[in-house]
Image (cartoon, rainbow, N blue to C red; front, side):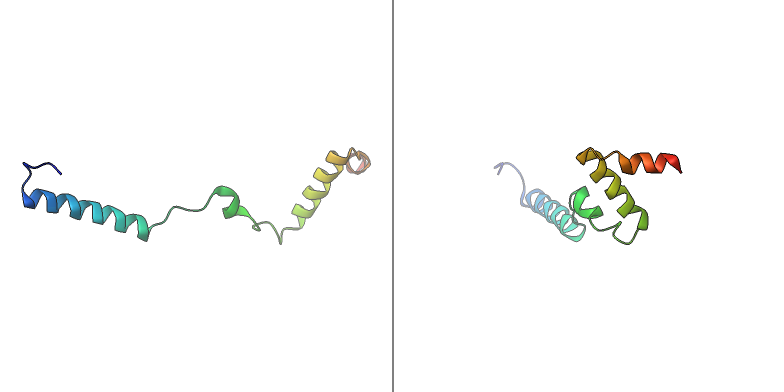
Length: 71
């Protein structure tokens, strides 16, 4: 601590820091973005279709994509 500061100034600094810490505790930062969206599409029927397309693309199975083009 700076020796020339008054007790009142030091106390005010401590109180300001406590207020800042209390604010951080009361309003915690959200988890990372992936944890926020995990499971948010589980009941969406189109999501399963998107997963199937992704799987087909990764496995090189173009028949699923060609069948969709014919519709």
